[in-house]
Every structure is written in structure tokens, then in C-alpha cells.
Image 1: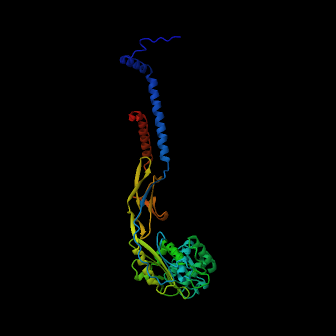
Image 2 (image 1 turned 45 degrees about the vertical axis):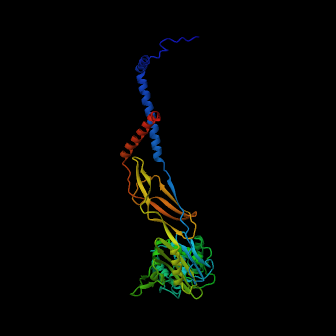
Image 3 (image 1 turned 90 degrees about the horizontal axis):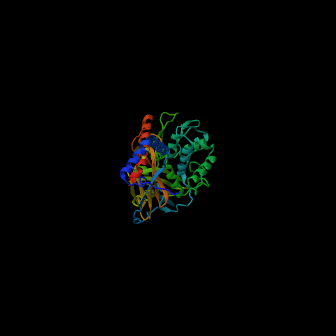
Length: 438
């Protein structure tokens, strides 16, 4: 069948097209209106679902990476050390700055008590009371004069152990944790292996000479660094005097520190001396200057304080601080509430520095991780991320990133109001998209 086109259907006259369009809209305006409303409602609902789903997204961490390559610098002449075995390490990284027979297994005398204190901190509360046994009270040699049946706190025993180097305090702690000195020695060995000190073997908690009781300068540096990580123990080892109540007498028992570094060396922070006829004079020493912390160990030294001081002087001259970020420096933002969108600045909890050792080629990398959103209201100072320092691929230190202000959530009505507004805005974007293309 042949279709015939009329003149009207072929017309290109604008007025004719307008008339026909108006006529069509006039006849179907209700359907068109309902269609537009239905489309708007459909797009609005889809937008609402999208906005709500986006608000439920937990988010992750926004990561940025900062790289630093410091100049290696020149190596200084090594210090003269008379000790049979010695080592100097940077506290945070554990990098060895100097070593002399640092892996030789030697008796270590009362520096053993560093490990005894670490085990005590893992198993006992500071306010816990220990009843002293007759065996512990009769430990002999250096003591704080504990009496059988006496009740004494773990905190006071730790001061007696690390400040006064009391053998009776070491035995009281060992018996409380493991029941006997032999069982406690096994606990010490398990602990030391767990932190990487695998060249050591302990048979008692106080360090008196016994066959099979030994360590190395390398392991003792590791154990000393572990002690400094504990704020309580770090405070104790730099204490010069501490009084412990003596129930049976009017005056207290006084603990006096034997570590001359605390009196004679600028920046000294600890840690522990030791002496027996077999071990000779030993010292695990530490100091902090200008943002650099060092740990030095000398075993069987005729001049333990002089050796340690020379090692520390050498270490401070061999290190330089590289500023990474300042306390409070804004490193990103965290979204706190979805309705309305509120953000809080996130900054560094403290000054964050890297320590560079001269003569060593080093690639420093800092990974900054800021939480993208928080499901809870944020209080100033709350943790919202972390910055991790790496040196040549080894993780050195982690510092918290914290909120620089407080942000609360809205009321239910406020959340609903902003939810509808955000949904409406997204709907408008969808409808305006074709026009925005051009």
C-alpha cells in the first residue's frame, strides 16, 4: 500500500510546529505533568539511596608518602674502649654505631636485673603486694633488707631492684611470678628470646655468678632499649634516691643509685650497673641530647663509666636530627559527620624527627595515614591516624596523628534536614547534567 504524505505533514513552518506542539501539550498536559513528577521522584529516590549509602561507607585511610635522602657525611675515628665487649646503638632504630666483640657471650652481673624488671612488668601490677619469703630475705650480698613475712608493693621492689640493685628484691619478684628461681629463669629465657635476644641464657634473676648465666653486649643493648620503652621503668632507672617504708623501724630504707652517669654525664637517663668477680665491671648506659637517644653497653671494663661516656660522646657526634614534622602540623582532614558534612583537621601529636648516622647511606620514608571519616563525635586530641618512619625499609617509629579540635554530631532533625538537602542537590545535578555538558 502506498503511503501518501499530505502537505500538512511535510510542513516545516515553525508556526505550524509550535501550534501542533501546543495542541499536543494541551491535550496531554496531565500525563506529561505526572510523568515529569514520577521521573523527579524516581531520580530523587535514587539520589537519596546514593547519599545514604555514601554516608554508611566507613572509608579507609588517606595515604601520602614523604621521602628524604640525607647526605651520608663522613665517618669519625672510633673511640678507645677498654672493655672486653662493648656496643653503641641508636635507641629508636637499634642501628649499631660501634661494636667491639659485641656478640661474645660473657657474664653480665646485675645488669641481669633489667630483664627481671621487664618480666615483672609483664606479669605484675605496680600496686600488687608481695609477701617476702625466708629464701628471698636471705638472698645475700647487695640487698634492701627485706624481712620474712613482710608485705611490699611491686613498685617498691622495682625501685629496690633497679636503683639499689637489691638481690632480695629480685628473688621476691621471681618467687611471686614463677614460684622458684629456677622456674623464673626459664620465664626470663622465654621472654628474652621473644624480644630477639637469642645469644643469652639466664639461670637466676639477680646476676650472681653461675655456670650457664651469660649474655652479650648486643643482647643487653636490645634488652636495655626494651626497658626504655616502658615509661615506669624508664623513670625508675634515672632515679638517684628512693625511700621504701620499713615497718619494723621508724626510718625508711633508702635506695641509692650506683650509676655515676646520672651525676657526671649530661643527658644521662640510666640504665643499670653490675659487678661480680667473674663478670668484672659492667654498665648498660643511656643518654639523650638534642632529640637523639643512645644506648651503650660495656662488659668487663676496668673503666666502665669512662668507656660509656666515650661511646656516648662518639655517638652524639656521629648523629644528626632531621625534622620530619612539627607538633600540631596539619596533615589532612577527617570527616566527622555525614549530615551536615563536618571535618576536623588532623595533625602530629608531637615533634617527629628522624636520626641520621653519618657515614651511612640512608633512604628515609614517612608514610602518613589519615582516617577519612569517623563514625563518632571527635574530641580534641583523639587519634585519627598515624605516621610511620622507615629507614632503608625498616620500620623505626610510629607517632599518632590526632584531632586538632572537637566536632560533635547534629540532632536527629538536623541530620534529616541535611540529608534531604543533599539528596535534592544530587537530583538537581542529574537533571542539569545534559546542559552542563555543553
